[in-house]
Each structure stands twice: as C-alpha cells, then as structure tokens.
Length: 338
Ligand SMILES: O=C(O)CCC(=O)C(=O)O
Ligand SMILES: [Fe+2]
Image (cartoon, rainbow, N blue to C red):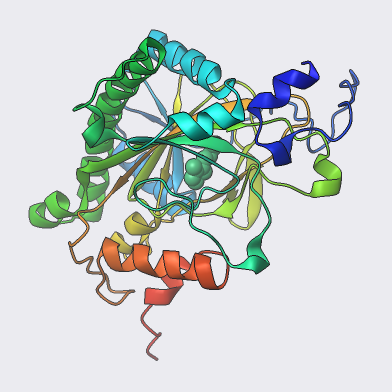
C-alpha cells in the first residue's frame, strides 16, 4: 500500500512512518496465524441438535452455525462492496453517510441511530476499527442515487432478510430449550430491531507499542448476534476463564448470545465474552447482525430486577459517559439471598 492509500484510514490510524514489511517467519500475537483448531461448538442450522445447542449456550454462549442457507455469492458480494466503500477517503466516508447507514470509527459504543457515544476521558483508548451501522427497517424505504451505494443497500437488505430468518429459527430453538412460554417467546425477540455493523479493522502497524484492540473485551447487549468474518481471523472468545482463537471460516457464521439472552435464561446461558485482536499486516472485514427484544417488554428473570431493554440501554449509555465502559447486567442483578 502506498502512503496515499492510507487516506481511507481515520487520521489516528495512519502509519506515522513507513510500515515495515511482514517478515515471512514472524508469528507473534499481532501477526496472526489462522488457528488449525476450532474450539467453538458446531450447530447445523438444517437439523438443530437441541442438546448440543443447550450445552454450547451454557459453556460458551457461542456456537458456529453451518448450513445456514445464505448463498456464498451474497457473502462475497457484500464483502467486496464493503471493501470498496471502506477504501474511500476518510473525509468522504464521514461526509457521505447518514442514517440508516452511518459511518463510525474508534469505538463500537453507538446510540441506536449510530452516533458515537462520547465516553468519559478516562476511556480514551481507541478501538482499532471503523464501520457502517445499518438500520435495516428504514433501509427498505429508501433508494440512493449513487449506484454503488444503492447496490450496497440492496445487498444489505437481502443479507438482513437472511439474518432475520436465522435469528428467528435460532431463538425458537433456544426458547424451546429454556421452556419459555409462547407469550414470552413472542415478546423477547423483535426482528424489527435488527441492525447490521459492517466493520473494517485497519492494519495496526505499531500494535506492540499501542497495545490496541480491534474491539476490547465485551459482551453484546443483544439477544443474539450473528457474525460473518473474512479469512483473516482475530476474534477471540472466553470460556471457563480461558481465551480461545475463533477459526475464521468464510462459509459458516458465528452466533453469540448477548446480555438479554443471559437474563432471559436466568443466567443458565452465557452472554459470550469476546474481543478482536489487531493485525499488523492485514485488514479484516466482518459483518455483525444484532437483534434486540421489544424495547418496552419487561424481561422477567429470577436473577435480575425486572427491566426493559430501554432501561438497559439507558444504563449502558450512562456508564460509557461517566466511567468509560459498560457495566451491563451487574447493574440489574438481584442481591443474593442466603
Ligand atoms: O468483528 C468481530 O469479529 C466481532 C465484532 C463484535 O464483537 C461486535 O461488533 O460486537
Ligand atoms: Fe461483540
């Protein structure tokens, strides 16, 4: 890449001196080798094994979904388009996108419409990523004049439809295992809240000095998140206090449970703790789908005070502004009674 090609990077991410070329045998933490072994439990979407699904949710809060039915051509096109848009000049990305597709960088902490939440000064560590936050429901009522943007919109819409289908199937299987009654099953998943985050993780040339993360350790606030990633790798998941590299596999998806699912399951299922490493020499693209409960539905749980997603989101936004990070479910936990 020539120096001008870094025009697409947010200024803070641009190399301060010429980036060093990768040495062929370097195999350090930031110069990832794709792991041979994949630790994440596998679930076949065409024939869901309820017991295996239950175990994966209890132990990992994450599983790999195979036979998901999303055409590879759609995935390829979506990634190609995303790469093209990310390679536009940073200033033009900042200027050209408004909801329902908004551009962000440096933090995944956004308001529902995709505006970066200004965090407390103590948390001015940047996450080494940029992205498009996409609201799916309004997307279908819109057309862009720019043909490139409009074909991106069409791909996002189709991808969103596929994700809605999968999220519904997965949630029904989870609700069955948890024996949620049909009224709760209906109220706990609102596919109208579905949104996408298309990410690019730029190269981080000074990874050792900066100690940066693509995304720092977190749990998602969602009911479910469904991730598709390219072949670069970098996603890690924590299970039983140990970190594992998730093996990138272009033809499968990674599903992780969010905080809402953890609360709905009375803590029997885990909201997966995960993070993304930076890479010194390769950019990475991933696309996440996130789905929430209806905002005013009260989530009843034996472990938490009754709360709505709107309460939860307000608390998370307050925490980001005041302490700089998300405290999350802990804030709603009922004190243990002995
Ligand atoms: O890019 C990834 O692999 C993970 C993204 C993620 O964790 C998130 O957006 O919450
Ligand atoms: Fe996440």
